Length: 385
Image 1 (cartoon, one colour):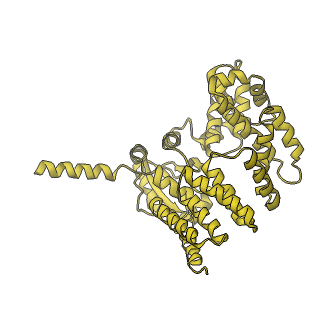
Image 2: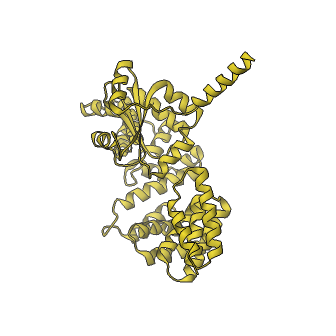
Image 3: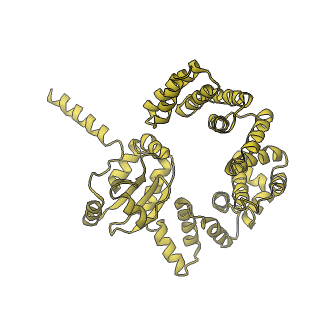
């Protein structure tokens, strides 16, 4: 009996540690403990309204491998950037996006950072970088600013800058590649493709001129994806009056002759959405869907939601509803069932609006999403004549 109880206690204990354990201490106490114990601090800088923050809580912080690593190596602190110690920490370390991850030395100095949703494996790698002086962004930045331009420093600083979201990484990658006599090694090709993504510079031109080599090494899909990303960064850097849509077409024609029209249209959809040009956005999406359609639930849901926001005529709302239902058919979740409910409501279909609103709420309850706007929609639906 005693052995059975011991096994149960050990099992419960293992469950309790199979996630990141965040301290309940305040910020000053956490700093004092870090100094006393000579341990690094990991800070999850979040807000209560941040959807990606909740995704990290649910899908990453809860993973046993992540919890084991972070609990063994850090004092873990979870700070709401809008309450308590959060605003002061946000000002001190320049936190403007959520979630942001801060890595603080035992002396209380910021040594590394990153942001956004990350897979468990990548998140563990991020923690390893935060502990390793050779990979810590602030340390590498200081060494670089003192004049070190060695290949090792340039390579490590490039990777660290990329991880922290600092756009200097592309220029640093070019500097590193300039120290390499052979760009055709697998390691250098992988580095070039991932980090040297300034479309107008020599590395990307090298990819364009040697696409078959890169396609054979990494697969055409990955190479095309990186080239498209590089083009988008270039084009959006001229966003506004300076951006020429003719230049968009020429760039895609030069890079992707067989898919130029499709990729130009995809770019225009993003561009008109950012510009809040509702009619051009809807016209372009309609044309795109007629010609190419989509097999991505998130993309379909995005188009449907924008039409819900922008469209007043039933013909366009019906199209949007068909996209929302296609999205639900691919992967039913809170987001697309909520969109379907909103579209049914706007079309005056009370029964289906209620049905999908209730589905959305059930999804949200399971996934931990904020469904208060859906509850407000449901109240409106119930008041329909």
